[in-house]
Image (cartoon, rainbow, N blue to C red; front, side, top):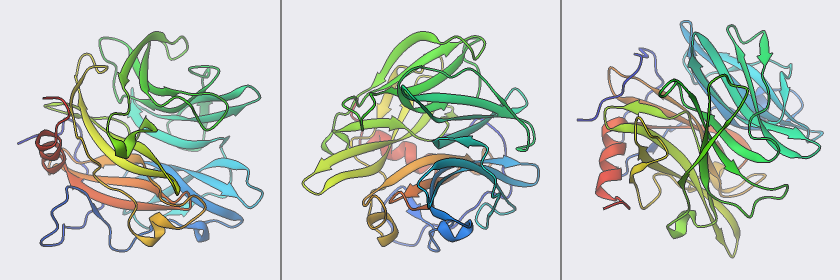
Length: 316
């Protein structure tokens, strides 16, 4: 059996899989958990990040306002399902990720600059006061995701290089830093392989450390005659050299199917941004953006996901 290396989350959101469901990831039956109605003047609230905090949970949420300005706000919950969002933006940009490291909560997000998108970095201890760091991967990148601990004495950041448009680039890379200021030693991680992800791939939630490697959930994009379709995939990366992909599922774990995933500002989107992982039970709660309109919740276990990867492995 696979094991999560990390903390116990006694109050992790959870719903058992329904009998007869053959798939490794299953949806919360009361989805979506966050909609535009959670915040005044929001057009949509979607790709968002959540972490355990004190006796509950804290998060950073992407809000596209009715002006269509893209901002990040904080939010809090006791159970990870019912959320109170603060109506005060902390940063401009979108698609945040969060992890706890070195006694602080680290935020990475897609930051908007006159020259294109870069990866913004900041940290906080209380979600009220933030210290902003130098931008990483200037000038143009998206999907910046920090590993939750140093590896061989260095911080590691997953990125997807791109351009000012939607993207002609579709590969995941990573880079290293000793001080969260200077980034280098870029390494290629993975490229699209199968049809469901052929347009591009991008890192999703903070990687989860397991006894078999780093469990990485990611998104893959298919370009069909009806436009883009975003789905969720999974891979295992080497613990000491995480640019090495040990195993990778050849098919998606979750794809647009429900109305809230298929209809919205951007139809047909399942975009994972955050995962809560309980080391004691192996349970994983996944938060994902649905149709660029709302936040939904899905569940899996480390055993089910890793078994699915092995049974459908691209890397023989």
